[in-house]
Image 1 (tube, rainbow, N blue to C red):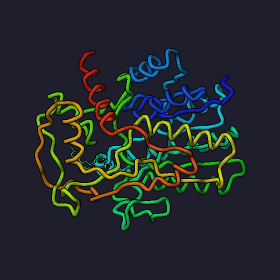
Image 2 (cartoon, rainbow, N blue to C red):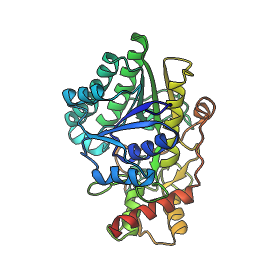
Image 3 (tube, helix red, strand yellow):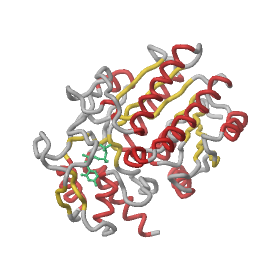
Image 4 (cartoon, protein in one colour):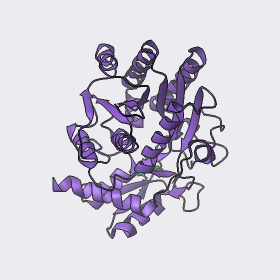
Length: 342
Ligand code: UDP
């Protein structure tokens, strides 16, 4: 066993799970990955192993299945869990709320219950900037009030944060960190792991890369009549490898007993707003490819602008976003191209 300890990564085969596993192992942790492959496949695990040049411990387990999850706790020693396993499509959550509440909360309750029962102290929850909604002041700090969720997906993030807060308050020896991600994009520089959307992508960058690859005819830009410099929405696009490193910093903080309160929240972003149009143009320039695009109407539920104040993460986690946006966009394109070589 590694001296640094072992981390259970639920949803380990997903976009953030794979990159975080790589970063944890590179930082000296052992990882137990679990995933039910509902939105990924074995090739994601193989990609992680290729990058690391070694096997990783992986089990195909559905975190909603308490009995199966219990087996993971019985077989493996770990002090920390990073819980990624969740559905994440906003529109689908509006169409089928029960699917989202059931999957995202049952899996989470199982994790928390077993962490408590097996006396495993540290829970890192993957939350989202979606909790801030249409914030009145920008950039948002962790103190910025959350707003009522506009989708069941967003609501599961808020509920899960609250559950973790309450557990940390109630149970001795139970610690929690919620990381609120802004917009994770890009891929590992090796192009061996990246985002694998099923069907038509909901998110901007996979839609851009698929359009550049000719899989989609034209990117629709949802609205150019927002009160922003070029009229398109502003977001904080965080490189996936930087995001993965934020998890390592948060785990370090938990295992080394440096937490100042039992439950902590950190924004994970770059602190820099980028517009949709700017991102498309930067992608085209960085990669020397064209992305046909047209302006269409606004997408329901989109907020005009949100970006992070990252001071807390910079100071307390000793973490900062480092990757250059052009490099991130090149990595996203390299990953897309690699997918079509296979
Ligand atoms: N967006 C877009 N066209 C797309 C997908 C997204 O114009 O095909 C815009 C979307 O309206 C938002 C930004 O890109 O302003 C980021 O959207 P995404 O779904 O990636 O993340 P979100 O910020 O909604 O979590």
